[in-house]
Length: 80
Image 1 (tube, rainbow, N blue to C red):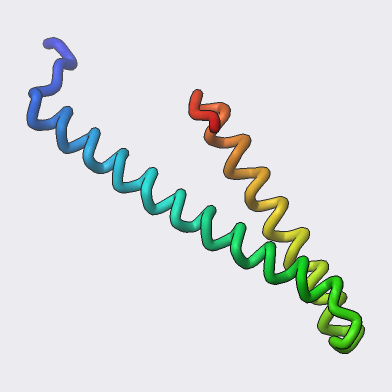
Image 2 (tube, rainbow, N blue to C red):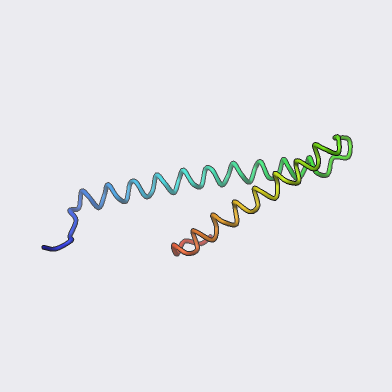
């Protein structure tokens, strides 16, 4: 018994992979926008210290998450 898949099954897999890629890139785009907002908040000395500290924490979390996504995509053989 061979493990061949039909052209229709292959097309379905490709479509699902494409949709998952689009969804992940939308999340990455959103994280980049939020990271930029956090960086702006960190530099705004008119904001309370607690707000700036939280912005720093959130920015670091975004950067760690983006790094994880980039590493995972590199392992899969996908790079920018």
